Image (cartoon, rainbow, N blue to C red; front, top):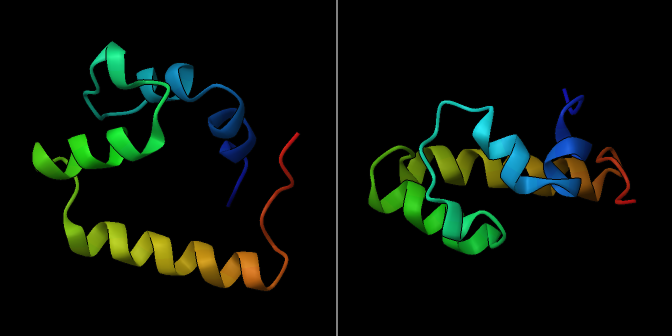
Amino acid sequence: MFENFNDFMQNLGNYANKTKFKIPNNLLTNPDEIINHLLRSEQLTQNQYNQVYEKFKELFRLGKTPKQP
């Protein structure tokens, strides 16, 4: 499930360029701005974000998220 998570955490810009999302280069180092951009540009719905965030919190609480380098 998290095979790409470490790549995401280590190099957000590189990972973002591999996805279907269109993210301006000036936002690639700020996760909050990326999320806001995706929501504002309707590439991500609030419901989708909420679902992912809740799942992440659950996995984190269970100790099932990868460790940051």
